[in-house]
Image (tube, rainbow, N blue to C red; front, side, top):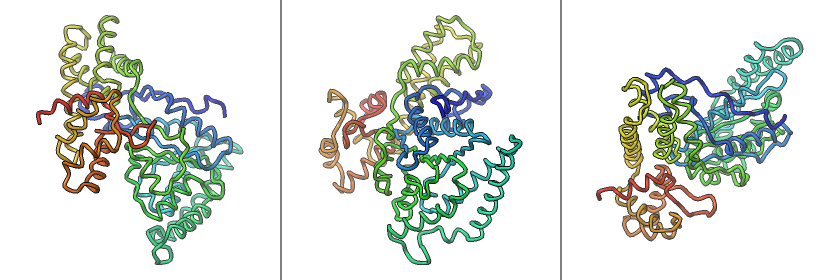
Length: 426
């Protein structure tokens, strides 16, 4: 496999314009038709896939984490599509989408893997001929039999007990390994990429630890690689769940896109919907909208929608006298997003304003955990538990994000969110 074996898949066709403008959030649209940037992050995925193809199995687990709106799901869908595009009858690959709640059960995970392999075997067999067809038919027969056998055994094996008794960590680990080993004869025929979205919701259980260990270091050398996508504390949560040694270079904090990447997204929107107007005027709009977005993927979508609504209302022609209206609407949509994020916070908004003001007084905008405690604990009823809950909630709401460089140091990942918090009238 060469370095171009996992190129980014081509952009999907944009949905009809009237429907796109009705969307309130890009998560409603499935794969992002205007996905751009994230080249460095995609390279981490591609290099891991290359290593798996080279026979390096175990320890290559990837974690992509960031605040809400950082583009985690969009990146995951691009990676999954790249796997699907790469799969051929002679070199079969399969991308498996797994929910965090499934990770409690080795039996459920293996059922999902077998089901995905069977579906991909069927798809590939329909486009194959000759010896490739015979091999795939053999795999399909094995897969059907294995799925039937697993179904007959039932999901009762998969719960929180083994043999009707509560498990401990060691028992759960042994049980998980056996379940994976039982399916190895089928699974070894594919390169398997497991994708878990919202991975911060993975539950800390002994059974989960057994499953994660098998995904991180697959038994019987099953060619499998896992990628977890979640909020800013996903790495910490997965460590609690038994993923003790993820590779440093494969733990990625998704932050802002650079200015040119943001511009490229907006240009692609204008091109897709064939707006008229001079190229100079278009570039002015692109530059100003990219500045307004500050490179945050969620904002790029929101300011693009706001601008396109203004353009369509005025004959689908980009004119500079309309730019002010577009920027004003874009700013409103950004603030609406911040209000939504603030509503997801469990504590009084004045606490988040206090953090934003304190961060603004530091040269780099970074606050240590002791400094956060100094700011927040006096205002909480339950100092220790209350602070831990506060910090977790702030991370999940996107108010804070842990820095990659120094553990337990935090910053507000969206600059304009900090501005919004500092201006709160409280």
